[in-house]
Image (cartoon, rainbow, N blue to C red; front, side, top):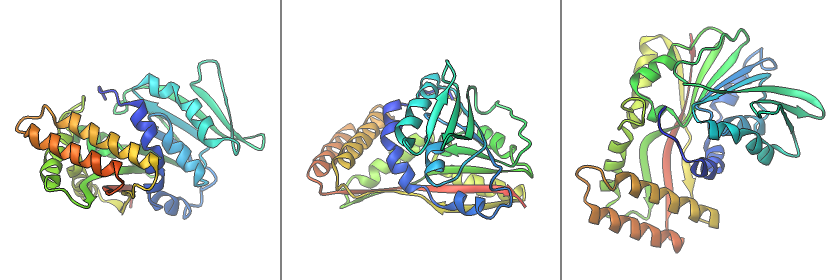
Length: 290
């Protein structure tokens, strides 16, 4: 992936992501006879938030390979793990902070290898049963990247896409221009994110069609952000969300900038006065061989 994603935005959304993730993976793992001997390959891992969520849900992986193209995000993984996992777990590292050990009660729970690599081309021969995870990535991936991900599915693994944007955004109360802005936003999500034209919310239907052709089991569950604007952190998050939308759409062909400015100012005022709530639709998707 060519684009760099904001570390501050990734860190800001982690709490909402972790609340939103469905039980789809946990339910599947609990059915496995190998549940005590599972590895993880986390692609587009960012700063390690999926691993944090997994441990919080008592999903532990023996060996974890975390892969991303952005070295700044990768180098923040250790501090992020320590911030969110202490005192339950201790985190040890080598001198370059790219090989970590997670310990619980002085026993090694997981070994972690952090890799800077292109996620589409990354290859790992993992013999143990393993989970291949993509978090908040499917909707920014082009068809070839999604095809490469599906080719990773073997008898000894499952493929897990979480927090896939499904194109649905609802504000309560609504604004006259919400549908107008959402139309442009969904079109923007289908633009090139640096490694080919993304499918945006259409990626979910694409995955369903491909799974049928490839004779794969597929399970989909909702995992929306539901932000009720009760706390200051909600206000900060929502204001950052609308600011990023405004910046993304401002130079988009065909956009009425006066409408965009009006929409942004109205939303900002309603957020400040805690008079508005936000729903952003996501889906979690689990795929494996029949």
